[in-house]
Length: 496
Image 1 (spheres, one colour):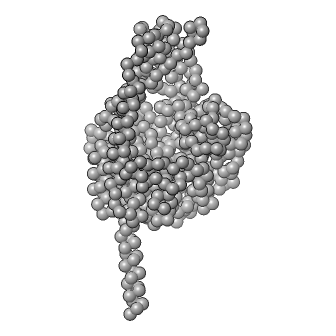
Image 2 (tube, rainbow, N blue to C red; image 1 turned 180 degrees about the vertical axis):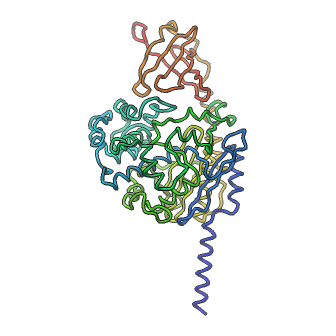
Image 3 (cartoon, rainbow, N blue to C red; image 1 turned 30 degrees about the vertical axis):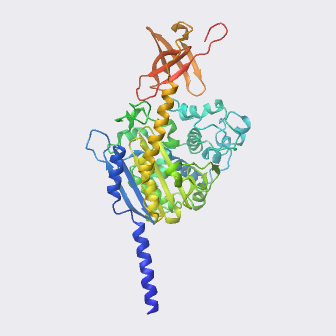
Protein backbone atom coordinates (compact mmCIF):
# COMPACT_ATOMS: atom_id res chain seq x y z
CA UNK A 1 0.00 0.00 0.00
CA UNK A 2 2.74 2.40 1.00
CA UNK A 3 4.89 1.36 -1.99
CA UNK A 4 1.95 1.83 -4.37
CA UNK A 5 1.36 5.31 -3.02
CA UNK A 6 5.00 6.21 -3.57
CA UNK A 7 4.88 4.75 -7.08
CA UNK A 8 1.79 6.77 -7.96
CA UNK A 9 3.54 9.87 -6.61
CA UNK A 10 6.54 9.22 -8.84
CA UNK A 11 4.27 8.84 -11.87
CA UNK A 12 2.54 12.12 -11.06
CA UNK A 13 5.89 13.90 -10.79
CA UNK A 14 7.06 12.44 -14.11
CA UNK A 15 3.80 13.36 -15.81
CA UNK A 16 4.03 16.91 -14.50
CA UNK A 17 7.60 17.16 -15.75
CA UNK A 18 6.65 15.93 -19.20
CA UNK A 19 3.68 18.30 -19.39
CA UNK A 20 5.89 21.25 -18.51
CA UNK A 21 8.52 20.17 -21.06
CA UNK A 22 6.17 20.49 -24.04
CA UNK A 23 5.84 23.87 -25.81
CA UNK A 24 3.02 26.04 -24.43
CA UNK A 25 -0.38 24.87 -25.70
CA UNK A 26 -1.21 28.28 -27.14
CA UNK A 27 2.27 28.91 -28.49
CA UNK A 28 1.37 29.01 -32.21
CA UNK A 29 -1.31 31.60 -31.51
CA UNK A 30 1.18 33.54 -29.40
CA UNK A 31 3.73 33.56 -32.23
CA UNK A 32 1.15 34.88 -34.67
CA UNK A 33 0.07 37.58 -32.24
CA UNK A 34 3.66 38.73 -31.70
CA UNK A 35 4.47 38.57 -35.41
CA UNK A 36 1.51 40.70 -36.40
CA UNK A 37 1.94 43.19 -33.56
CA UNK A 38 5.62 43.69 -34.43
CA UNK A 39 4.91 43.91 -38.16
CA UNK A 40 7.21 40.98 -38.98
CA UNK A 41 6.43 39.48 -42.41
CA UNK A 42 7.60 35.96 -41.64
CA UNK A 43 9.39 33.88 -39.05
CA UNK A 44 10.37 30.35 -38.12
CA UNK A 45 10.72 28.67 -34.75
CA UNK A 46 12.31 25.37 -33.72
CA UNK A 47 12.34 23.72 -30.29
CA UNK A 48 14.17 20.54 -29.29
CA UNK A 49 13.80 18.68 -26.01
CA UNK A 50 15.52 15.57 -24.69
CA UNK A 51 16.84 14.47 -28.07
CA UNK A 52 13.58 15.11 -29.95
CA UNK A 53 12.24 17.90 -32.17
CA UNK A 54 9.04 19.09 -30.53
CA UNK A 55 8.41 22.06 -32.83
CA UNK A 56 9.68 23.17 -36.22
CA UNK A 57 7.32 25.52 -37.98
CA UNK A 58 7.05 28.62 -40.13
CA UNK A 59 4.73 31.59 -39.67
CA UNK A 60 3.71 34.41 -41.99
CA UNK A 61 5.09 34.97 -45.48
CA UNK A 62 8.48 34.90 -47.16
CA UNK A 63 8.01 38.40 -48.57
CA UNK A 64 5.56 41.23 -48.22
CA UNK A 65 2.85 41.45 -50.85
CA UNK A 66 2.68 37.70 -51.44
CA UNK A 67 0.87 34.69 -50.00
CA UNK A 68 3.98 32.51 -50.17
CA UNK A 69 3.97 31.02 -46.68
CA UNK A 70 7.02 30.28 -44.56
CA UNK A 71 7.34 26.59 -43.64
CA UNK A 72 9.77 24.52 -41.59
CA UNK A 73 12.15 24.16 -44.57
CA UNK A 74 12.23 27.83 -45.60
CA UNK A 75 15.80 29.08 -45.33
CA UNK A 76 16.68 32.36 -43.62
CA UNK A 77 20.14 33.94 -43.32
CA UNK A 78 21.07 33.33 -39.68
CA UNK A 79 23.87 35.86 -39.16
CA UNK A 80 26.40 35.40 -36.39
CA UNK A 81 24.80 32.20 -35.10
CA UNK A 82 26.92 30.76 -37.92
CA UNK A 83 30.10 31.47 -35.94
CA UNK A 84 29.45 28.19 -34.13
CA UNK A 85 29.65 26.37 -37.48
CA UNK A 86 33.07 27.87 -38.13
CA UNK A 87 34.29 26.72 -34.71
CA UNK A 88 32.76 23.29 -35.32
CA UNK A 89 34.69 23.11 -38.60
CA UNK A 90 37.90 23.92 -36.75
CA UNK A 91 36.95 21.27 -34.18
CA UNK A 92 36.89 18.68 -36.97
CA UNK A 93 40.44 19.68 -37.88
CA UNK A 94 41.45 19.51 -34.21
CA UNK A 95 39.94 16.04 -33.89
CA UNK A 96 41.91 14.99 -36.99
CA UNK A 97 45.12 16.22 -35.38
CA UNK A 98 45.75 18.78 -38.11
CA UNK A 99 45.56 21.83 -35.86
CA UNK A 100 45.32 22.65 -32.17
CA UNK A 101 43.21 25.41 -30.62
CA UNK A 102 46.36 27.06 -29.27
CA UNK A 103 48.50 26.83 -32.40
CA UNK A 104 49.89 30.22 -33.48
CA UNK A 105 47.95 31.43 -36.50
CA UNK A 106 51.18 32.14 -38.42
CA UNK A 107 52.06 28.45 -38.10
CA UNK A 108 49.30 27.77 -40.61
CA UNK A 109 49.14 31.18 -42.36
CA UNK A 110 52.73 32.49 -42.49
CA UNK A 111 51.55 35.65 -44.29
CA UNK A 112 49.10 36.60 -41.50
CA UNK A 113 49.82 40.00 -39.95
CA UNK A 114 48.26 42.08 -37.18
CA UNK A 115 49.14 45.75 -36.59
CA UNK A 116 51.57 44.83 -33.80
CA UNK A 117 54.32 42.29 -34.74
CA UNK A 118 54.25 40.83 -31.21
CA UNK A 119 50.52 40.17 -31.49
CA UNK A 120 51.10 38.62 -34.91
CA UNK A 121 53.51 36.15 -33.32
CA UNK A 122 51.33 35.38 -30.28
CA UNK A 123 47.87 35.22 -31.90
CA UNK A 124 46.43 31.70 -31.64
CA UNK A 125 43.50 30.02 -33.36
CA UNK A 126 41.59 30.31 -30.08
CA UNK A 127 42.27 34.06 -30.09
CA UNK A 128 40.60 34.37 -33.50
CA UNK A 129 37.35 33.11 -31.99
CA UNK A 130 36.91 34.90 -28.65
CA UNK A 131 37.09 38.65 -29.35
CA UNK A 132 40.13 39.46 -27.19
CA UNK A 133 42.59 40.49 -29.92
CA UNK A 134 42.75 44.14 -28.91
CA UNK A 135 40.74 45.29 -31.92
CA UNK A 136 37.95 47.74 -31.19
CA UNK A 137 34.25 46.89 -31.31
CA UNK A 138 33.34 45.97 -34.88
CA UNK A 139 36.81 46.81 -36.18
CA UNK A 140 37.24 45.64 -39.74
CA UNK A 141 33.51 45.40 -40.50
CA UNK A 142 33.88 48.19 -43.04
CA UNK A 143 36.09 45.87 -45.09
CA UNK A 144 32.98 43.93 -46.14
CA UNK A 145 29.94 45.93 -45.02
CA UNK A 146 27.76 46.60 -46.89
CA UNK A 147 29.65 44.60 -49.54
CA UNK A 148 33.09 44.04 -51.00
CA UNK A 149 34.80 42.64 -54.07
CA UNK A 150 37.89 41.69 -52.06
CA UNK A 151 38.75 38.03 -51.69
CA UNK A 152 38.73 36.54 -48.22
CA UNK A 153 42.53 36.50 -48.13
CA UNK A 154 42.74 40.11 -49.30
CA UNK A 155 40.40 41.05 -46.46
CA UNK A 156 42.53 39.25 -43.89
CA UNK A 157 45.65 40.91 -45.28
CA UNK A 158 44.19 44.31 -44.33
CA UNK A 159 44.31 43.42 -40.63
CA UNK A 160 47.86 44.75 -40.44
CA UNK A 161 46.51 48.29 -40.97
CA UNK A 162 43.87 48.26 -38.22
CA UNK A 163 45.22 49.87 -35.07
CA UNK A 164 44.24 48.12 -31.82
CA UNK A 165 41.98 49.78 -29.28
CA UNK A 166 43.36 47.89 -26.27
CA UNK A 167 46.30 45.67 -25.47
CA UNK A 168 46.24 42.04 -26.57
CA UNK A 169 43.97 39.73 -24.50
CA UNK A 170 43.12 42.51 -22.04
CA UNK A 171 39.50 43.17 -23.02
CA UNK A 172 36.47 41.84 -24.89
CA UNK A 173 35.35 43.62 -28.06
CA UNK A 174 33.13 41.81 -30.56
CA UNK A 175 34.42 41.62 -34.13
CA UNK A 176 33.69 39.67 -37.30
CA UNK A 177 36.90 40.08 -39.23
CA UNK A 178 38.85 37.51 -37.20
CA UNK A 179 36.19 34.91 -38.01
CA UNK A 180 36.90 35.76 -41.64
CA UNK A 181 40.53 34.94 -40.80
CA UNK A 182 39.41 31.67 -39.19
CA UNK A 183 37.55 30.78 -42.38
CA UNK A 184 40.64 31.52 -44.45
CA UNK A 185 42.70 29.37 -42.10
CA UNK A 186 40.48 26.39 -42.90
CA UNK A 187 41.24 26.96 -46.58
CA UNK A 188 44.99 27.19 -45.88
CA UNK A 189 45.06 24.00 -43.78
CA UNK A 190 42.67 21.83 -45.75
CA UNK A 191 42.75 23.20 -49.30
CA UNK A 192 38.97 23.41 -49.44
CA UNK A 193 37.22 26.74 -49.07
CA UNK A 194 35.28 27.44 -45.90
CA UNK A 195 32.07 26.95 -47.91
CA UNK A 196 33.12 23.53 -49.24
CA UNK A 197 34.45 22.36 -45.87
CA UNK A 198 31.30 23.38 -43.99
CA UNK A 199 29.12 21.73 -46.61
CA UNK A 200 31.01 18.43 -46.70
CA UNK A 201 32.18 18.11 -43.10
CA UNK A 202 29.34 19.73 -41.15
CA UNK A 203 26.07 20.16 -43.04
CA UNK A 204 25.98 16.85 -44.91
CA UNK A 205 26.94 14.63 -41.95
CA UNK A 206 24.51 16.57 -39.75
CA UNK A 207 21.65 15.94 -42.18
CA UNK A 208 21.06 19.66 -42.62
CA UNK A 209 19.76 19.20 -46.15
CA UNK A 210 18.41 22.69 -46.78
CA UNK A 211 21.14 24.78 -45.16
CA UNK A 212 23.63 26.44 -47.46
CA UNK A 213 26.94 28.20 -46.97
CA UNK A 214 26.99 29.41 -50.58
CA UNK A 215 25.40 32.71 -51.53
CA UNK A 216 24.65 31.63 -55.10
CA UNK A 217 22.94 28.47 -53.90
CA UNK A 218 20.87 30.50 -51.45
CA UNK A 219 19.58 32.75 -54.23
CA UNK A 220 18.83 29.66 -56.33
CA UNK A 221 16.71 28.13 -53.55
CA UNK A 222 13.04 28.82 -54.20
CA UNK A 223 11.98 28.19 -50.63
CA UNK A 224 13.82 31.16 -49.09
CA UNK A 225 12.81 34.19 -47.06
CA UNK A 226 13.44 37.72 -48.31
CA UNK A 227 14.88 40.60 -46.26
CA UNK A 228 12.79 43.48 -44.93
CA UNK A 229 13.51 46.57 -42.86
CA UNK A 230 12.13 49.93 -41.82
CA UNK A 231 14.23 52.38 -43.81
CA UNK A 232 11.98 55.31 -44.67
CA UNK A 233 11.98 56.95 -41.23
CA UNK A 234 14.44 59.43 -39.75
CA UNK A 235 16.85 56.54 -39.22
CA UNK A 236 16.91 52.82 -39.90
CA UNK A 237 14.56 50.93 -37.64
CA UNK A 238 11.56 53.24 -37.75
CA UNK A 239 9.03 53.80 -40.51
CA UNK A 240 7.23 51.37 -42.76
CA UNK A 241 8.35 47.81 -43.42
CA UNK A 242 9.71 47.42 -46.95
CA UNK A 243 11.35 44.59 -48.85
CA UNK A 244 15.09 45.04 -49.43
CA UNK A 245 17.20 43.95 -52.37
CA UNK A 246 18.57 40.62 -51.11
CA UNK A 247 21.62 40.86 -53.38
CA UNK A 248 22.83 44.01 -51.63
CA UNK A 249 23.41 42.25 -48.32
CA UNK A 250 26.52 40.73 -46.81
CA UNK A 251 28.64 39.00 -49.46
CA UNK A 252 30.65 35.78 -49.47
CA UNK A 253 33.77 37.38 -47.99
CA UNK A 254 32.40 37.49 -44.45
CA UNK A 255 30.53 34.18 -44.62
CA UNK A 256 32.60 32.48 -41.86
CA UNK A 257 31.40 35.21 -39.49
CA UNK A 258 27.73 34.78 -40.35
CA UNK A 259 26.94 33.68 -43.89
CA UNK A 260 24.82 30.57 -43.42
CA UNK A 261 21.17 30.34 -44.42
CA UNK A 262 19.18 27.67 -42.62
CA UNK A 263 15.67 26.47 -41.79
CA UNK A 264 13.75 25.53 -38.67
CA UNK A 265 14.09 21.81 -39.41
CA UNK A 266 17.82 22.04 -40.00
CA UNK A 267 18.55 24.26 -37.02
CA UNK A 268 16.62 21.81 -34.88
CA UNK A 269 19.09 19.11 -35.93
CA UNK A 270 22.00 21.46 -35.19
CA UNK A 271 20.69 22.10 -31.67
CA UNK A 272 20.27 18.35 -31.08
CA UNK A 273 23.91 17.84 -32.03
CA UNK A 274 25.06 20.66 -29.77
CA UNK A 275 23.08 19.39 -26.79
CA UNK A 276 24.44 15.87 -27.45
CA UNK A 277 28.00 17.25 -27.37
CA UNK A 278 28.73 16.36 -30.97
CA UNK A 279 26.79 13.12 -31.31
CA UNK A 280 24.66 12.89 -34.45
CA UNK A 281 20.90 12.29 -34.21
CA UNK A 282 19.64 8.75 -34.71
CA UNK A 283 22.92 7.42 -33.26
CA UNK A 284 24.84 7.78 -36.54
CA UNK A 285 28.23 8.58 -35.04
CA UNK A 286 29.72 11.94 -34.13
CA UNK A 287 30.21 15.28 -35.86
CA UNK A 288 32.95 16.27 -33.42
CA UNK A 289 34.37 14.79 -30.25
CA UNK A 290 33.18 15.22 -26.68
CA UNK A 291 36.48 16.97 -25.95
CA UNK A 292 35.89 19.46 -28.77
CA UNK A 293 32.34 20.08 -27.55
CA UNK A 294 33.69 20.89 -24.08
CA UNK A 295 36.20 23.32 -25.56
CA UNK A 296 33.53 25.15 -27.56
CA UNK A 297 31.37 25.70 -24.45
CA UNK A 298 34.20 26.60 -22.07
CA UNK A 299 34.24 30.36 -21.27
CA UNK A 300 37.43 32.14 -22.30
CA UNK A 301 36.74 35.88 -21.99
CA UNK A 302 34.74 37.73 -19.35
CA UNK A 303 32.24 40.23 -20.72
CA UNK A 304 30.60 43.09 -18.91
CA UNK A 305 27.05 41.83 -18.26
CA UNK A 306 24.47 43.91 -20.08
CA UNK A 307 22.51 46.00 -17.62
CA UNK A 308 18.91 45.91 -18.81
CA UNK A 309 16.80 48.86 -17.59
CA UNK A 310 13.35 49.07 -16.04
CA UNK A 311 11.00 46.18 -16.73
CA UNK A 312 13.82 44.31 -18.50
CA UNK A 313 16.06 44.36 -15.40
CA UNK A 314 15.35 40.68 -14.53
CA UNK A 315 17.18 39.75 -17.76
CA UNK A 316 20.47 41.18 -16.47
CA UNK A 317 22.83 38.20 -15.99
CA UNK A 318 25.11 37.67 -13.01
CA UNK A 319 27.90 36.63 -15.35
CA UNK A 320 28.48 36.86 -19.08
CA UNK A 321 31.32 35.22 -20.98
CA UNK A 322 32.37 34.29 -24.50
CA UNK A 323 33.53 30.82 -25.49
CA UNK A 324 34.31 29.50 -28.98
CA UNK A 325 31.48 30.89 -31.10
CA UNK A 326 29.03 30.88 -28.18
CA UNK A 327 28.08 33.25 -25.36
CA UNK A 328 27.78 31.59 -21.95
CA UNK A 329 25.73 33.41 -19.33
CA UNK A 330 23.17 32.83 -16.63
CA UNK A 331 19.49 33.66 -16.40
CA UNK A 332 17.63 33.26 -13.12
CA UNK A 333 20.56 31.16 -11.89
CA UNK A 334 20.52 28.80 -14.90
CA UNK A 335 23.35 28.57 -17.44
CA UNK A 336 22.44 29.45 -21.02
CA UNK A 337 24.54 28.76 -24.12
CA UNK A 338 23.41 31.20 -26.75
CA UNK A 339 24.20 33.44 -29.71
CA UNK A 340 22.31 36.03 -31.70
CA UNK A 341 22.62 36.94 -35.36
CA UNK A 342 21.73 39.93 -37.49
CA UNK A 343 22.33 40.58 -41.18
CA UNK A 344 20.59 42.93 -43.57
CA UNK A 345 16.85 42.33 -43.19
CA UNK A 346 17.04 39.34 -40.82
CA UNK A 347 17.49 38.61 -37.11
CA UNK A 348 17.83 35.35 -35.24
CA UNK A 349 18.76 33.75 -31.95
CA UNK A 350 19.76 30.31 -30.70
CA UNK A 351 19.38 29.55 -26.99
CA UNK A 352 20.43 26.26 -25.42
CA UNK A 353 19.52 25.28 -21.84
CA UNK A 354 21.89 22.37 -21.18
CA UNK A 355 20.49 21.54 -17.72
CA UNK A 356 17.04 21.09 -19.26
CA UNK A 357 18.32 19.51 -22.51
CA UNK A 358 16.32 22.13 -24.43
CA UNK A 359 17.18 24.21 -27.50
CA UNK A 360 15.30 27.19 -28.95
CA UNK A 361 15.71 28.81 -32.38
CA UNK A 362 13.83 31.90 -33.58
CA UNK A 363 14.43 33.75 -36.86
CA UNK A 364 12.59 36.57 -38.66
CA UNK A 365 12.86 38.16 -42.10
CA UNK A 366 12.96 41.72 -40.76
CA UNK A 367 15.00 43.76 -38.28
CA UNK A 368 12.42 43.90 -35.50
CA UNK A 369 14.56 42.19 -32.89
CA UNK A 370 12.07 42.70 -30.09
CA UNK A 371 9.99 39.84 -31.55
CA UNK A 372 12.99 37.48 -31.55
CA UNK A 373 14.21 38.35 -28.05
CA UNK A 374 10.72 38.43 -26.61
CA UNK A 375 9.58 35.06 -27.90
CA UNK A 376 12.86 33.34 -27.05
CA UNK A 377 12.76 34.67 -23.49
CA UNK A 378 9.14 33.63 -23.06
CA UNK A 379 10.12 30.10 -24.12
CA UNK A 380 13.07 30.03 -21.74
CA UNK A 381 10.73 31.06 -18.90
CA UNK A 382 8.37 28.26 -19.87
CA UNK A 383 11.06 25.59 -19.74
CA UNK A 384 12.41 26.92 -16.45
CA UNK A 385 8.93 26.82 -14.93
CA UNK A 386 8.80 30.58 -14.39
CA UNK A 387 5.58 32.66 -14.40
CA UNK A 388 4.51 33.85 -17.87
CA UNK A 389 5.71 37.36 -18.73
CA UNK A 390 4.99 39.41 -21.83
CA UNK A 391 8.66 39.98 -22.62
CA UNK A 392 7.87 40.96 -26.18
CA UNK A 393 5.85 43.98 -25.08
CA UNK A 394 8.62 44.95 -22.68
CA UNK A 395 11.18 44.82 -25.50
CA UNK A 396 8.81 46.84 -27.71
CA UNK A 397 8.50 49.53 -25.03
CA UNK A 398 12.29 49.57 -24.60
CA UNK A 399 12.80 49.99 -28.34
CA UNK A 400 10.25 52.81 -28.54
CA UNK A 401 11.93 54.71 -25.69
CA UNK A 402 15.37 54.26 -27.20
CA UNK A 403 14.16 55.31 -30.65
CA UNK A 404 12.66 58.47 -29.18
CA UNK A 405 16.01 59.37 -27.59
CA UNK A 406 17.86 58.67 -30.85
CA UNK A 407 15.43 60.84 -32.78
CA UNK A 408 15.85 63.67 -30.29
CA UNK A 409 19.65 63.41 -30.50
CA UNK A 410 19.55 63.24 -34.29
CA UNK A 411 17.39 66.34 -34.54
CA UNK A 412 19.73 68.20 -32.19
CA UNK A 413 22.77 67.10 -34.16
CA UNK A 414 21.32 68.10 -37.51
CA UNK A 415 20.52 71.67 -36.60
CA UNK A 416 20.97 74.21 -39.39
CA UNK A 417 24.57 74.14 -40.62
CA UNK A 418 26.81 77.19 -40.67
CA UNK A 419 26.53 79.07 -43.95
CA UNK A 420 30.29 78.85 -44.53
CA UNK A 421 32.32 77.25 -47.32
CA UNK A 422 33.27 75.32 -49.19
CA UNK A 423 36.83 76.65 -49.16
CA UNK A 424 37.68 75.40 -52.65
CA UNK A 425 36.09 75.01 -56.03
CA UNK A 426 34.35 71.63 -56.28
CA UNK A 427 36.89 70.39 -58.81
CA UNK A 428 39.64 70.75 -56.20
CA UNK A 429 38.03 68.08 -54.01
CA UNK A 430 37.97 65.53 -56.83
CA UNK A 431 40.69 62.93 -56.90
CA UNK A 432 41.76 59.41 -55.98
CA UNK A 433 41.81 58.58 -52.28
CA UNK A 434 42.67 55.47 -50.28
CA UNK A 435 41.72 54.07 -46.90
CA UNK A 436 43.24 51.12 -45.00
CA UNK A 437 39.80 49.55 -44.53
CA UNK A 438 37.79 50.69 -47.52
CA UNK A 439 40.62 50.66 -50.06
CA UNK A 440 40.56 52.96 -53.12
CA UNK A 441 37.93 55.72 -53.18
CA UNK A 442 37.16 57.85 -56.20
CA UNK A 443 35.66 61.35 -56.09
CA UNK A 444 34.77 62.87 -59.44
CA UNK A 445 33.17 66.11 -60.56
CA UNK A 446 30.23 65.35 -62.80
CA UNK A 447 28.62 68.55 -64.04
CA UNK A 448 27.89 70.63 -60.96
CA UNK A 449 28.10 67.80 -58.41
CA UNK A 450 30.71 65.62 -56.74
CA UNK A 451 30.29 61.85 -57.03
CA UNK A 452 31.70 59.46 -54.43
CA UNK A 453 32.56 55.84 -55.29
CA UNK A 454 34.04 53.26 -52.92
CA UNK A 455 35.61 51.05 -55.58
CA UNK A 456 35.99 47.90 -53.46
CA UNK A 457 32.53 48.24 -51.93
CA UNK A 458 30.12 47.86 -54.87
CA UNK A 459 26.98 49.92 -54.41
CA UNK A 460 28.59 52.54 -52.17
CA UNK A 461 28.13 55.38 -54.62
CA UNK A 462 26.40 58.71 -54.18
CA UNK A 463 26.40 62.48 -54.45
CA UNK A 464 28.29 64.81 -52.11
CA UNK A 465 26.18 67.80 -51.11
CA UNK A 466 27.88 70.67 -49.32
CA UNK A 467 26.95 70.88 -45.64
CA UNK A 468 29.22 73.45 -43.97
CA UNK A 469 32.88 74.48 -44.08
CA UNK A 470 34.67 71.60 -45.90
CA UNK A 471 32.18 68.97 -44.84
CA UNK A 472 29.81 67.36 -47.32
CA UNK A 473 26.79 65.14 -46.76
CA UNK A 474 26.57 61.91 -48.75
CA UNK A 475 23.31 61.09 -50.48
CA UNK A 476 23.72 57.45 -51.41
CA UNK A 477 22.17 56.07 -54.58
CA UNK A 478 20.91 53.22 -52.39
CA UNK A 479 18.27 54.96 -50.30
CA UNK A 480 18.39 52.21 -47.65
CA UNK A 481 21.84 53.45 -46.63
CA UNK A 482 21.84 56.27 -44.12
CA UNK A 483 23.49 59.59 -45.11
CA UNK A 484 27.06 60.13 -43.93
CA UNK A 485 29.36 63.12 -43.52
CA UNK A 486 32.60 63.45 -45.48
CA UNK A 487 35.09 66.05 -44.28
CA UNK A 488 38.12 67.20 -46.27
CA UNK A 489 41.25 68.38 -44.45
CA UNK A 490 43.29 71.11 -46.13
CA UNK A 491 47.01 71.77 -45.76
CA UNK A 492 48.65 75.19 -45.33
CA UNK A 493 48.51 75.74 -49.09
CA UNK A 494 44.79 75.03 -49.22
CA UNK A 495 45.20 71.61 -50.87
CA UNK A 496 43.30 68.53 -49.81
